[in-house]
Length: 126
Picture (tube, rainbow, N blue to C red):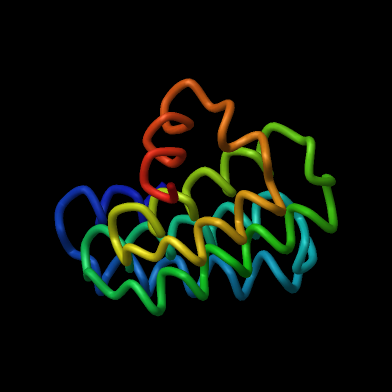
């Protein structure tokens, strides 16, 4: 998709413009909690976190997408788990917050069992 391409080219503002257009269309055509709409929001969050280094905006967008997936697909769905992992990474690396990571783990205990981050998260919050 064009937003991902622009993000990979380090045109973060261009990527966000594209994502915002895609989000607007997605919400009108598919609905606010459709997985494709929520994936666009997650892409925006990743651009804020990685490219623009705006942890506050990234957290807002990650949380919006995660809340939408919890409502539409439930907590145990693989996409919901994936997006909770992305938010955990933000709390671990991008905007370190032991308290926020602890709260997220209470909501999503599978994070401590994750083969990629479980041990890191456990050691960070202890």
